[in-house]
Length: 414
Image (cartoon, rainbow, N blue to C red; front, side):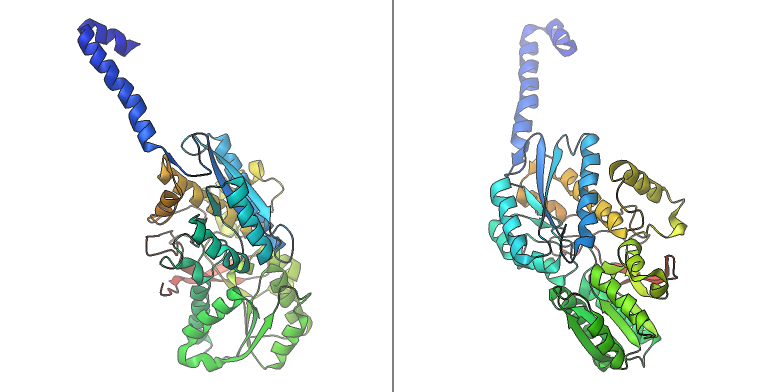
């Protein structure tokens, strides 16, 4: 109104021109800039997700629940660029055929813009060709398998956490530097995930690969890994590497203690480093002295108690996910993933096409999220689909993890 009255005083012709210009400015750029694919509108962004809410990997269900809680928080604050997130999350029970069924449902029936944080190496392997064939982003998958960072072969698929080969290389470096005469026994999940960590370990050991004296696999359908642990002890190994998902990692730590095996070095891989999800069920006394790696702030570490970021995360949990465990680092992981996803959507602006979602995901520059460890940042590019590549060693003292040594990078080629 104020502009119109000012225009009238300057003359009708000028006012008409100004009015036309204003009308064009109001209408044209908006309609020209807004680009949507299926799953995005002026008011909503529909995001698909697949999680093991049941089955052998159900300890990870907290990740999906935390992400849902984070998006609820974002929606309550007005959404992203004025759009609410509709988070559609299904259970696949860590079963690849079920994951395929759920991915098809999300893409073809629910009409999601993309699938975010589908969990597990087997499930993501099963849907990767389908997602790339459909040109629907399979974004920030919840697995560190190195194959999910292949930007040339699978440009619609991207990981998030440090990849498993990098982690394996870091363990190899630690063992070689500190226990060069050790004998390594490995328990590993018999799938792409377990084999990926093994490849990193072997590549990292290089000419010293003969340090590995036993490699014992397990299947996710196995009720326990007790017999595997007995076999590893009998091998004479004095370094135990536990490449297992939470249920089996906890069983292994417990069985090692029960049979009186006392390896000099007892390492559990990062995906099973949760105090609440793994070490508590294994028995905290049994887990004392266990080593692992970290890239995020452990909620059980008292050194963070006055950290502003930790306080913000705790307040988020209390308000938005009150039933969630405060000692499970999977709740920190889910929170960080929610933040990363929101950053990508912010960068997308009003161009919510699948192509632009991938373009923005591949354009994260030194993104420092406050629950990542100091010195750890997210970086991507069109040829770098590995957002996080840094880890720090840590040791469990019976109550909490204590980090030691430098933040390390175990970089793996493409």
